[in-house]
Length: 308
Image (cartoon, rainbow, N blue to C red; front, top):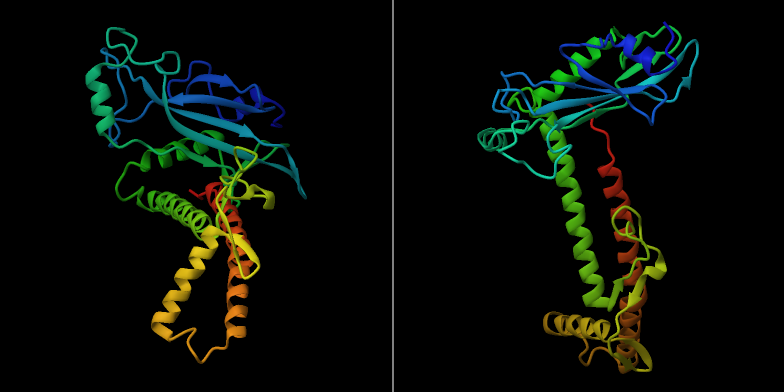
């Protein structure tokens, strides 16, 4: 069968109107062919979902399926199938907070028990499955054929496996490594920004909210601090740069006998001017480029898709 809209996709994935497993079929309004369904979590995993007093679950797995824009390929037209799954609190979807007196809400005991249990990780997949839009046949990334409902079952099992110690170990390690890399880059960027401020008397004043977080800085985003400037041998430099140079000069003087009789006065003046020029121009420019490089790497890491 060909797939042209959400109803065709529903038929392909064998979702019934009164489906006992994949419930509450909802068409997605922002997709030509897409829907969401909900599935209850099994009782044999380490996650305890919120439950009402009668035992009915409040937390379910929300699964979204979208047939992306068609990609013309030879000899057939194939479209990637986008999947996402995450825990979904049906009560908080319609309420600000829990009301334990409400019979339609979770019990206090189930909330406490659920918070103490492992929570399944949300997953996304955009390159694991493809659909032949002419025949409705679904293929995995290796070319194997699957039925639509099998895809939902496999994806749901992978989601549940994230709370299992062994089966979810590899995926949790990938996610934690990604998060750790992002945090490390953020620490390095903060340190370089501090170095720029303390040693060069400059700070960033970005014009947009996302600049410095997801987007690199523009050169005019880097501003001189409103601090006193000093004139050294006819060269005007920020106070921070002069103090930094003085500290470095004392270190060289103490450990390398720098600046004593073996160095001429003219050479000393040249060293001072060049050093200050370096702290005022080349050094801030180098830090600026390095910070922007790390921001781009952080953005790439943030949007890196983890294969499941």
